[in-house]
Length: 596
Image 1 (tube, one colour):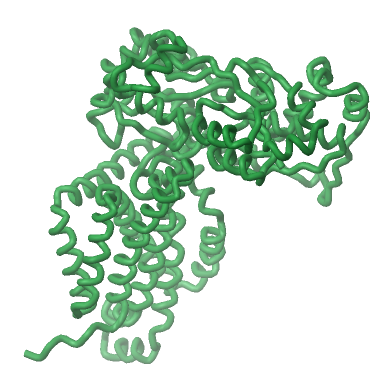
Image 2 (cartoon, one colour; image 1 turned 30 degrees about the horizontal axis):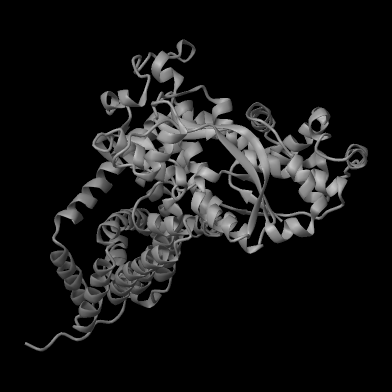
């Protein structure tokens, strides 16, 4: 069982190793996908057997703890020349005449120059600062970069923006590059990003082991320096290594380099139908002088002599490259309309930031009183306001009030947009059977589609941050509201509607005075379900840079910090209870008001 780390170079190495083991040694192999820290833990526990890329500097503590406990073993260096650093596109410094891009920062050479260019790398969520795209949330390099921001005195000038996944960071860089926009980001190699895009690594004070160790041991009193050129290792579970000496012998001989891997990743990008498996097959075919040194001659003969016959259950001639068509269409769409979507994004972001700022201006006690007042108005009872006030106090006791405010602003905006779109659409479907038959399959697809899929167009159109999170959340959460509005209006007794018509009420009066009031329980149930689904998107949206409680949950997952993830999860549940009880109370019967 291989660990399927979520980046391309590891996927390539894993597929090369699988080909050798399956064809040469007759092994059965599989891949368990995941991120660095969970997979290192899985390696120590024996859930997986081999990790083809162990970046020790990025998983220092979990790897060292597992190694000292005798649970994992290093099988040698996979490639010795991995690079890391802070990058900007070359056109930012030198321009790009072919694309009509003028130099934006011709004097930008080193990290120390960044203080002069905050406006160039402006953070749309905090316009007074620039945005630095940090390493993946929870990785060691994210912690190191955070320390570097402080060490270089940049925290006053740049926000520390931490993407939730490697794919999100890569998408942000790719989207900015395709549109010719400035971006400042940490990245590493070998990767397809550095292979495909012309990026310049900003200069830092030169690396030395003593200076690097001093900075990491005491960052407050020692200046930061450049990242070292890193050796990336092959790691294995200790018990597996003891039980499979022939496989371990092969993996100890396995060695590549930055250039070789970059070529393979470039092949993957230019041959999109190949994937990691196809790149591995291409490597086996074109570089026998390299991989045949890893295995005995008889094993090499089996690999070269075996021909894999792939059985297709569907005729190849009928297959069409739908993925390529969609990707090309999306690429042209972003290039053509990206600026328009960015302008719309700025308007949406202003609304989100304003609402978040309004919530922050309210003292915590006043905020709780306002929620209690809404709960009393919805229920006309005392129990619900007291219970919800205690629920909100719990969030404060957990130390997550500020993060909850960020999440609350996203949810309010997302649900508000869903209501503005979903209610009219639901009304239209209730009044037009043909439209209902057309739209229902679309709603089915929207509800069945994995929620992660919505992040992809959101990333390409809006970049990372709050706006794509709202976009993805609205698409994911709106269908239940549309369905329940439609259902509620169709459930109204036709005799009441006909009686209103007989008394002279026009269609508009029948809708607003008869149908909508009687359908209110269903409509509020739809709002309730939309709100719950929006909250369920909080953690997923954190993968594309939506800050708040979801980011804390994701950080707990990435760092395997059970307490952190649990506490943030409890806070999300608390918010869900507040939304759920208030919307249910508005949709249900209220306690009778006292007689006057």
